[in-house]
Image (cartoon, rainbow, N blue to C red):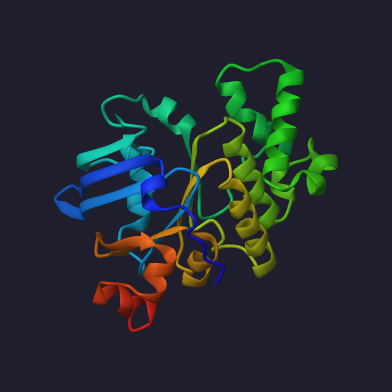
Length: 261
């Protein structure tokens, strides 16, 4: 594992603060009193067994759960000290906090139009400006060299790994501050997975990244902070090295050592 934690807690700038977060689907409580600080320009990994609340939680951070009937949330989530449920319009928030999903989901249009879609929605029409955004975003997503000669061909015609990096470029095109990733490599082959991991390591120099992963080795390789979820509770959160090598919670240790999960 290549784990680094060069910045002390005192020096970290906190980008997102979650306090006493409860989430209900109707009468069923899926998340219980979650508390976590997400640091700027770090990778925070969310680990835990299937169905433990990781994806539900990450979707609260840009209000994706708003579109689900019967969802009720209490507690607070603050992005740069502003409550996201009281002080942000969801569209404005999702421009700042973008999301990459488990399976690549390019739009059925050209590579170029996929990346230009978000900027156009936000009012950018000038072709030269759009050309610059598309090139910059594809370069940031480490796919420009592979795809620069196919910009006007269908995005659905490229490989799965390329599609996922295209989806990352599409998020980056609107210049977000935070990038959420919900199992972004689970549908990819090992080579594509490695490329995405290298990309994440590069992107954290400019972005705050929160990633859900079932792959503990992946969490160990790419994250600075790890939060262990179990049954809708954050059982432990800390520096990745500490979580993996000296967890304080017996449940965390049992999961890390493969006793369940």
